[in-house]
Length: 171
Image (cartoon, rainbow, N blue to C red; front, side):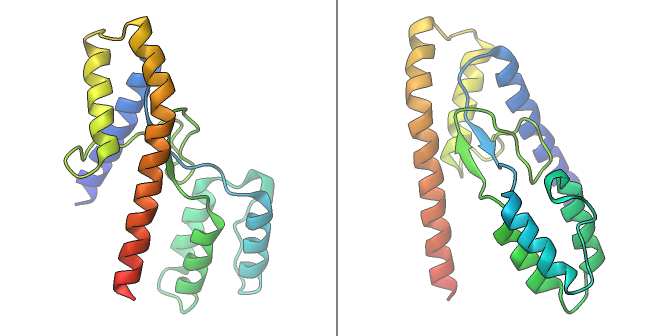
């Protein structure tokens, strides 16, 4: 199961890098760096429990969060720390520009592996097919550059609505 997840992540990174290298339009899955104030508040909270991210607030990388998760695994404070850690992070979203994926420590990432389940993946499949066939005329590229930011925003909004509906159902 873990190997399959690693292959899927690698496929998503590879396709994103390919599209970026081609210089054509694309939709990326982005996860921006956490806000420094939130990291500082998180560090203050966990230090009261005897933990630390072990890095200056302005130099925290994904590996620091992962190491903390490894240290707290199985402890009574694991759930509240993990919950607050998630609240510290930005929400992942779709964007027409590549802003990197902090949580995965990936400089270039997209969703590609579930075109039947996720519409953004289907869009990426279509863009990839067109890029491989060199089917991007100047007019089509301009149209896509105009359309994709709205497609990305809409997909992110729909994802949030689905997550909210799922949470409400569980409650």
